[in-house]
Length: 356
Ligand code: IPM
Ligand code: MN
Image (cartoon, rainbow, N blue to C red; front, side, top):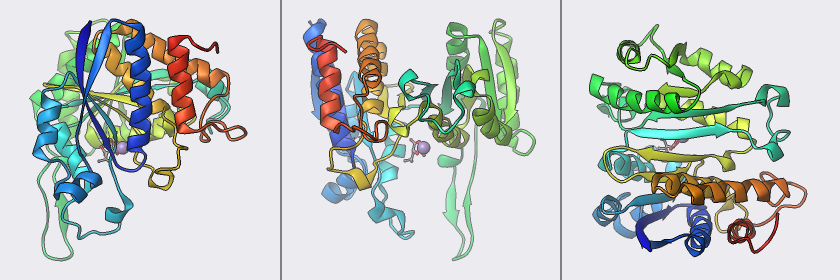
């Protein structure tokens, strides 16, 4: 039996509830395959600030660095959102763990679910065949540039990229394209920004190494429109940190609920798996949040841990639960199930104790 050491960072809001459903699903996987999951828990976000004063305590970083993979719930607490003077913020913990683990590439698959086609605000015919993946740069750009205030009424955030930061994620995106439909779209603002012109230059140069991949360039404002107008045109979307943040939340409405979308962050050390949604504080402790995004993030983790059959099982169980209408209120308004009931059902489907 192989043992995988997983560091779990439940975080804030609904984080602890959704992460424990993901662990339930992993227990079902462990019962079926020759693998065992060994967990270490760590603090991050507002819960970490409350307990230690820091949004990312040193022992959390150490636990992540030594893990085979990290599962993160969510980070964020409204107590901090409307206090511009707050010195420490939960989100700093998330940015700091990305930096500490060298997680320069955030992978966000965007797909539709048959059972949810009519939930999306976009007309169903535009959603036919939509299946793309966003490669978002995660440790550079305006998020990490020099920032500050000058006096009371002036503030700045610098956006800086260097060639090496662009090359390493571009290679991953091109490789992904060769395994998918051989199309890569770079989203930038090269008509205005120097950093975007550097992105274009570097991607143009690298494209010579991937002759099978057709490369397309879109300005971010146009891309924002195309994601709604004609999402089926995309295969791999490559973009910088902030544009990727914005485009991926926008693209999530394609799937019918923000509660459905997983992500993987990869780089130089341990990889981290988290839903793309936030901490949804209004639902915290109510057992109503959708655990599927976290469960699908765990499927991405299983692929990463070289357990592709288990990953497939998890995805199928999620589809089966959805197809039988077994889902939380964001997806099934008429007969909503609780967070824990959905986790139980998915785990049971994997263990094949129930039929769909
Ligand atoms: C995300 C989130 C984070 C980001 C926040 C919480 C710092 O929105 O993971 O997309 O902007 O990267
Ligand atoms: Mn975001």
